[in-house]
Image (cartoon, rainbow, N blue to C red):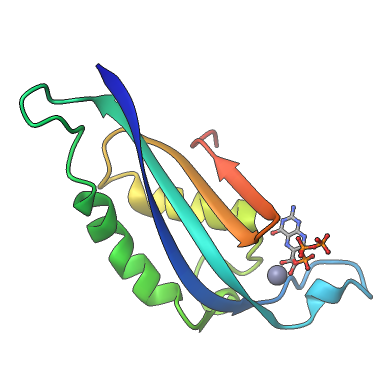
Amino acid sequence: MRARLTKDFCFEAAHHLPSLPEGHKCIQMHGHSFKVEVSIEGEVDPKIGWIYDHKCISDAMKPLLDQLDHAVLNDVEGLESPTIEVMCAWFWRKLEPDLPGLAEITIFETPTARCSFRGEF
Ligand SMILES: Nc1nc2c(c(=O)[nH]1)N=C([C@H](O)[C@H](O)COP(=O)(O)OP(=O)(O)OP(=O)(O)O)CN2
Ligand SMILES: [Zn+2]
């Protein structure tokens, strides 16, 4: 049996988008409550009944959340223009080595705006 397993995380951070045209409101520094959904896919171990412990996802995310929570995202290497598209790619590169079967990362910037990424660079 194959399945998809998803774990959700939240953090607060400030950012601005410096490359936008003059007059765009997002040039100004502002903040969001970001939500990150990390999904893995794989075979379910028939004895235990899971792909692997979702604590592995939490453990892989912890140093990244420690780095980003209450930070200015633009100050983080690789997030100089921190759109949710760029943030998805940043999380992917950091998580992929530690999370077999990494399948999708979705980042919500607001309750109505989100980006999903499946590692297609
Ligand atoms: N493709 C993207 N578009 C936008 C991004 C992004 O990362 N990728 N980011 C922003 C800004 O960060 C902005 O702060 C988002 O907030 P806002 O525009 O207020 O978003 P809402 O969903 O609340 O906007 P409404 O359209 O007013 O509902 C902008 N664009
Ligand atoms: Zn924003």
